[in-house]
Amino acid sequence: MTPPQASVFTEQQDGETFLFLQLMPPTATAAEQRIIPREVIFVIDTSGSMGGSSLKQAKAALALALTRLTPNDTFNLIQFNSVTHRLYPTPRLASGSRLHEAQRYVKGLKAAGGTEMQTALTHALSQGANQEASHRLRQIIFITDGLVGNEEALFAILQRDLQDRRLFTVGIGSAPNGHFMRKAAQFGKGTFTYIGTTTEVQNKMNRLFLKLEHPALTDITIQSGSSTVRNLLPNPLPDLYDGEPLTVAFRTTTLPDSITITGKQAGTHWETTQSLVDAKPRTGIAVHWARQKITQLMDQRTRQKDKTLLQQSIVELALKHHLVSRYTSLVAVDVTPVRSDAQTLHSHALKTNLPHGMQSEAIVGWAQTATPATLYLVLGSIMLCLTWLWSRRHLAG
Amino acid sequence: MPDMALVSTTSRRLVTIRMTWVMASLLFAFGSWLIGQGAWIHLKAVSAQWLLQQAWHTSLNTHVPVKPWPWADTWPVGRLVVPRLDIDQIILTGTSGQALAFGPGKVQNGQDSAHDSQNIILSGHRDTHFSFMQDIRHGDRLIVQNHQGKWLSFTVRGMEVIDSRTQTLPMNQDQADLRLITCYPFDALSTGGPLRYVVQAERTQDLN
Image: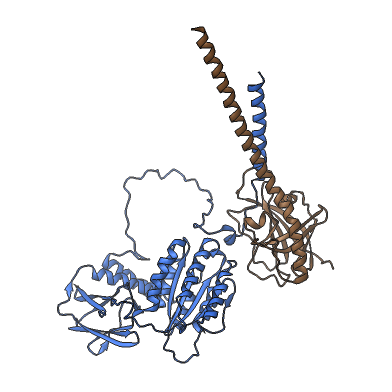
């Protein structure tokens, strides 16, 4: 098994040094990988917006995920729409009969009602809380289209109650809320998997299972000398997963000679020391860092009452590195206007087109309440009349 | 060559007659098929109500939802009676196309229907079950039997035409009233229009 590989690049700008660290996951054959028992909480969204093909995909993904559990794993299933329902009060060992029961439960899921995610998330984050400080990998797999309005409240709960759990979001349907899913996975130190069509379920879920079953490196920290480097971006630092390199950016005024990367590999301590003396200089690292920094500030912004200070720092950063942000834009001025200023514009309402696969009656409530019966009857009668007239004219004489 | 000309004209006439027959038969077949389709929709709408009545009575006796036929994805959840218009229909759950083909559908507004003080919204096809809506007048009595078998009485207080593009369904009002919804206008040929005819009825004293 090759150990995780690290490479470092730097850029000097205005007396500051920007560092870019890339960590490649180790390559290991299946035989070398140790299976660590897991505690998996599946959460599935059965709100009205999941109706139709979305729920079909979600069910297929869930059914597949259940088959990957080993008898040493524990699991539970939570579904939510307007109300939340759990399969078991606490996670249970994944015995054959329990899995059978779970598969039946999944098969019976139906989509209706609203998206009350908060209770479901709280439930998922309180599962198994009073178990012995377990050696299990605690994972939450959250299958939803993420059509919620209270994202900030959900992020706050996630950050408060996550503990050593990892949250993996699985986005379903043609138009999931990508922002929510990505951020939730980021705060949950997991990953976001997007499944667009039913044919993708197998492929995408298999890739997710690899990550779930064999996290390459967890609890990663970076030390410079004897102290831990604090201002790492992204924050929190995610785990390193199979097939997904981890990139970290940070800024420093004094460049240390070396940094030490530590983490846990299959439960055991792992560390490597990386010399910075021969780190290769590259351009664009400062901009990458600034972009990450702005993202971090924007995440803080939602939690802070006084936003003027944050806005100031974002604008400052964005202007310095020529970046588009919430407060800064790149403006192009059109020198060839087509419409004269005096001309007025027409305006009228347009029908809202829903994303593919979503059923309007599940969202808006207006059902389709006309049948083509009358149209068929009228058209049919006209055709019969025509046939009669025509055959009379042509065949009589 | 007068003979040749004569033959060719006759054969051309024969071909024309045959073509006419083929065209006419095709037109006839397609016309009949369309009429069959139209009639089938009405036939389903009427005959399904018979099966639904059976299922409804069983479900009232056993207090569990009963599917009218094994492969149905909807089941009866109530009964709608309009005494003046001699209407008596079984209400289905959900407003999917599969449900509305067989009976008026109750909009699932997320709340469980255990308490009868929530508003009830029913949708139906304007050309089958809910075609009676055009004859509804102010003050008409509408009666709904809920899943517990309780009869709830309502009085019509208003009707309006609503544009579904700009207005949303009043879902979560805690007022205990009844709304009937169908497509508008009633005699339109095309489906999928944005207009809806809404009858609003207020809860009055109950029967039993």
